[in-house]
Image (cartoon, rainbow, N blue to C red; front, side, top):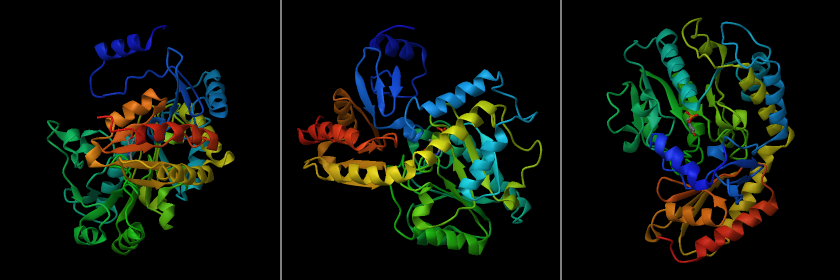
Length: 406
Ligand SMILES: *Cc1c(COP(=O)(O)O)cnc(C)c1O
């Protein structure tokens, strides 16, 4: 369909449910870190679809893998049958995570749901917690998706108002405070579900040693440590997984987003045999989960991370990006919080909220989105070059050094 930016926006707004408040830009074409609107204006994407596009738009290797699979005529088999791509994908994921088995789903929220079901069944059948009493510990400020169960333990009222009744069995405690965690653990605790960095929560990095100590407590008390690395995993923070910054191995990983480089929804949950074996035929599944097109795309997307050394690149380029950001002499910046290429720039409360700054950035050709009112997130595709960072910094500096855009 041909049209102008305004026509596409009007059409989407007229017929779509208003459960989002997008910036007024239509993305019609993409390549690497760059996108174009229908009117031909060019922008740098510093959101990268919440880190799903770590490999960048239009990646030729992922594109070719997708086209090759489509041309076989087999894009969906359901799990009633085997296919030729799923095994290869799961093997790569297991070798990457160090876990024995992987269970494929589609979206991130489904991976989280899968992990929660697995943890509960493990709690009942293996650990011996009474079926109605298993507890899973979660954290204030968490983001794990939007299903009814997942929002049951959100601490963000926007996600919850009017959606009750909620699923019981979750204990919500303060993030980053190990003594709260120690106090929350009891004999009914089956698992702890944690983001190693709270990205949606505002790029919150817990104190050094926190996850390590949590790992030790979980091992000692026979509690599953479940890491939601849907946004932080697969290179974003300068390690393959963000938990590696503390040198730990969780019992369960949830991965999605960049696992398919933005081509289509693919997610996966990994664990060792003693935990994963609680799933028996018929106990869980998804029609599209493990589909050969998604698997082929994911094999290619994970291959790109490795072949192009995007993990190392996130570390190196992220450091450069942060240095340049910190060198901007701005009256509006409270602090820069970052790990690798997951960067949060916090706007001072005296300068208002982050949204108007994002709107100004957009006018200058940079797409970035506010998270939690006061934080601008910079998380471009990891293929970004030094020259491209310089291009961005020049424009970011212009926005941050003029008077507050409120
Ligand atoms: C995006 C995200 C999810 C949810 O993924 P969807 O694919 O949107 O369902 C869960 N956890 C984290 C940490 C995320 O960033």
